[in-house]
Every structure is written in C-alpha cells, then in structure tokens.
Image (cartoon, rainbow, N blue to C red; front, side, top):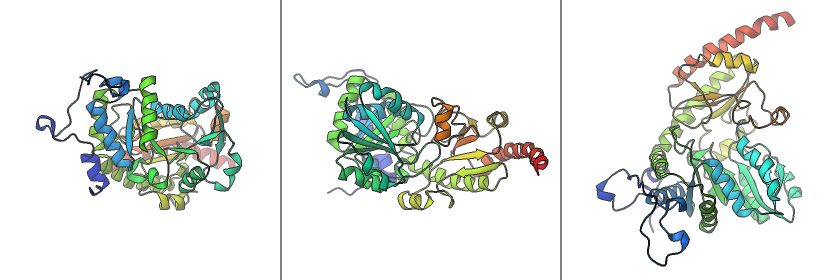
Length: 397
C-alpha cells in the first residue's frame, strides 16, 4: 500500500502525469478543445474540454482529491459554479435545505433568490448551537450546508458536531472551506460528504484566475461532474495550468499568512481607532476555543470594526500603498475592502445589519508581505481616523 504523502509533498507531486511528457517538469497546457476517443465510448467518456476531462483537468482533480483526502476531485469555472452545481445535483423541487445563517453573499443570493424559484425551501441555522438543529429537520430535508470560516465575521461553527448530525439524519453535508484551505482544515476527515472551494482564493493564491474546486466521495463527485458537464461550467485549460501551479506553493503561502494575520490582528486590537477585531486566533473571539481545536492555523482573513463612518474609512484607504483596496482574497497581496460595498453588497441594509455587517466593517485578506510593512501602511490611516474622532469625544465628555 502506497504511503500517504504529507500535504506539502502532495501539493507539489499529487496528480502529476507520469512519465513526464517529453520530460517537462511543469505540466504543459493542453490547449485543445477535443481529443481522439475510442469509437463506441459513452458521451461522458469523450475527450472534450466542456466535459472537464482534458489532461490539465485530470491532473487537478487528482491533486485536489489528494489534498483533501477525498476519493475524487473536480474543478469548475468559478467557486459559485462549484457551489451552485453541487446543490443543484442533490436538490430538486419539493426538497428542503438547511443552511448556516452567515454565508458568503453570492451563496446567500442563490439560496434566497434562485432556489425558491426551483421549488426548494431553505431554513437557516446557527452553526454554534447544535441543540437547535434537530427541530429544523423536515421529512424532505436533503442537504446541510455550512462554511468552515464565515465571511466576513470569521466565525467557526461546531463543524464536527454538524458532520455527525448530518450522518445521523441521512443528510448530504457540504462545506465551503475557502477561508480555511486544506492547510488549516480537512473537512472530509471530520465526516463531511463534500468540501468546496473558490479556488480563485487560497488554492491559486495569485489573484490571476477565477476557478472553483470540490472533493468528496467518488459517486457524489461523479454526479456533480455530470451536472457540471450539462451546465457548461468548465475551467479553461490555461486557468487549469495556473491553478495547478498555484497549488504547489499553497502550504508555504498559507503558513506565512497564518503567522502574519495573527500578528496584525494583535496590533489592530491595540489601536484606539479599532472598536473590535474579528479573528479566531484572538482569545476574545467567541469561537477561539473551537478554532484551536479544529484548525491547524487561524487563517489569513479578519474583519475590523472601525470607529468611523464608511465615507471616512474610504477616504483614508485611498492612500494605501502596500495594501490594495480590492475585492477577493487569499492571494499573496494583502487586500482590504468593506463588505457592505463588495461581498455583501447584494444584501439589503437591513439584512446586513441583521448579519452584523456594518458600514464601518473592514475586511482584510492578509498576504505574504512583511507584517511591519503592512502595519506601516495601515497605521497612519488609523491614526488619522482616531484623530478625527477625538474632538467629538471631548465635546461629549
């Protein structure tokens, strides 16, 4: 029996085509829409780019499965393509979905706007309260859906209990582990049926493609691939090549981001312009104990509540030099944004307020730069916000 390789080795070597093509150490790009097939092959066995089975796809599928400890893997044209196709594979008219009550805005929109049109009912649950879940299960409940670390408040639910709960009630369990990455969490080992990623983020890590990925047991992944083949959400071979390349440095990047984010969160927590730092590595985070138990590292994502209005924050962030004010996350560059303007802009103000997302909330995706340089970029902006607040504080004293 072949020894299971450790994650850093698997990220580099799993799924590689052997023997190497013409000795190329780096897997070539197979820029071909179609491939010769054996007469009599079934439709899904044809070599065709839309069927997600070029050599670039196959290598990625094997690599992602190895990283997650799954039987099979699959890539898609985006994280949302992976999420929506997976849900559409196992849900149909008349079915019921249990979904965590704090989700990425794109996923939330799909659940609230699209699934009801298809006859699927959705009920939301608090992932930190296992005692409340059983009463939400209906005879037609088919799926339970959660996020490993939520966006943008970086909450960590009782994931091990959730996986057990799904098995006890014969539900398909799905988890978006984008924020954690396989470096910090392996949900399949907790008992989840399917793990999903926006591979745009940590898996690729270089802010130059959009992609999705998933892994799980082979029969389920095969069903999802067939649905994906019909819906057409295939990943382009060049994007496959870039994702394949990005994964090879995953453990190095995420390890650095884990360390830098914790240090930056500690510095932010001590600044007077900061009302609160949401980061599971801080002892006062409500899920700190659970995060220490579940996660190998606390991740590179945090959100910060500032003592300023959204307009004041925007004005100060325009002067950033090392950080970039931009959507997305998980790359080697540090990105900062306000979720009310970006990831959760599709929600109403009342919905954002109910989810704890204020106009003063800033989300930071910590990259691989030196922490001192990040702090030198951010601190003067925080100092300026604090100085603007002081006169008002003195008047009300």
